[in-house]
Image (tube, rainbow, N blue to C red):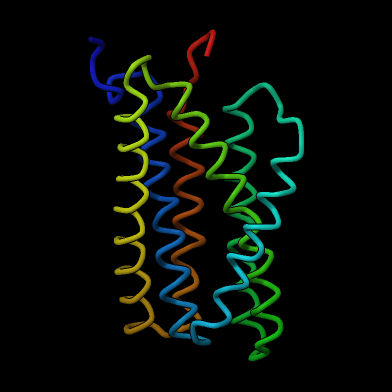
Length: 185
């Protein structure tokens, strides 16, 4: 039996990126509900759904690391849209559009990240590798929810949108610095 997937080069950084990505999701949910209510949050899911369908129909680039970094770059940029909308206008339709666009980064990032987990996990340990990824994601959701809630309570609803942007940037930085794909995977 091979060792734990945690010892696979690139896996700890990928799990840290999943932790930060989870923080994006948790913070965005809490901040949006505090700022505009829960119904508008469905637009982020709709954006993810459409983007996931489109992404699934494309032939992906062979360099999975580059794909992940591209997805995380897109997520970082798109997560700034709700912040910009909330900071520049009180328009609910503007925030709705920003959330729809921000959601477009979610499915492609998750599909690419989970594909990379699958490739990095030693044979016979895929269940463990996926469990680690989902655990990191859920831990990030909890941390992001708590951080986003704290920001809303102490600095205001608009400022809370800084948390998902920073979490996405952290995911990108961690993945850039540490995610490596061994040859042949």
